Image: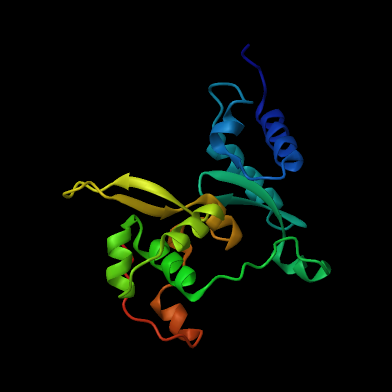
Length: 183
């Protein structure tokens, strides 16, 4: 059944879906509720502009859209909704390598870290849904690669991996960093 909705009605549909969802919604899922000819990118851009000065902001997380409390209002909430994750040093290093070098194989992670990566580390990061299997490399053995997920982006409040801090930003924070592979 083809719906006949004007621009304002389509914006209202997207708002209703986002307000009632506890998880970010994929653009594909949002499109399913609109007419086939709807310009979803235009609708999202309009809603982002509308909400940028409001108490909630429309935020892109990878290929998904969600509503988040405006950053300047975070102090109003005593209890943080996101629990902090305590990761081992190996898990933090592995996650950083995947984030900055993705897609990356386990062997490449081990070469960068200089030690063998335990399967428990990979399992932990996959269990948190922060990394996932990527495409296979076209090298001998066709090893599987790892890459970050939208849940990783959401947890660290990033729109895409391109939003990760660069070398200069990390140095400004007082961190010692070697050259990062930022393709």
